[in-house]
Length: 255
Image 1 (cartoon, helix red, strand yellow):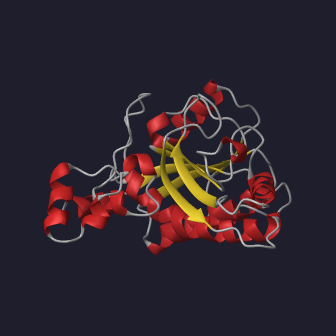
Image 2 (cartoon, helix red, strand yellow):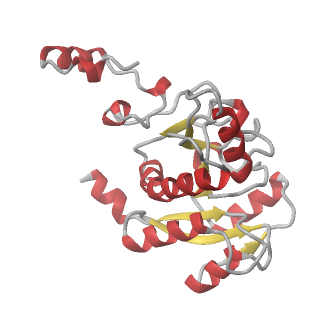
């Protein structure tokens, strides 16, 4: 019953998306969030979308679907806080947003990154999009242990991509991949998973206090999934015992 009530409510969301400066180009993450909202996967109301390009691809999409478009030209904490106040948003989703974020509640601001954030070679300042994919493909030469990933995390002011992650979907890098081929594959997985995982966050099934040192809380079933970051896979003793008794110990031994 609680989940039904959570889905009946529409959570007010602002999306931040840089996209492409050319009209009609870029903004695919923003578009898929809209489509999944319309399809009922995401119980949200997109009250506004923000881009640093005044007449780029993000605005093209916003105009098509009648979503309030905000052109952001300054990026201080006060500027972000003003957008939050003016829109009345409860959640802030970064989908291809390239500017540093400050002034928004860390436990209600979520980013998706096209690479692993636990490997500092592939995240941080100036590591976005094509740069991430190129770095991974280069590192993969001679080292088959290098994987790409789709990562989602809460956003803090400590730096780019350093907020606590709660989703990491590993992606194999093919021999012969270049940045474009890998990027296209990563992008498809981003579109497939972003809305589902975002739904778990905004409905409270995945949560964080916003306090440094506090761990992200995830459902018990989520801890057994391969996309759950390793540090969150600790299972309670009674669950491990139950699985040992039932002969399913392999699921319970993840930690």
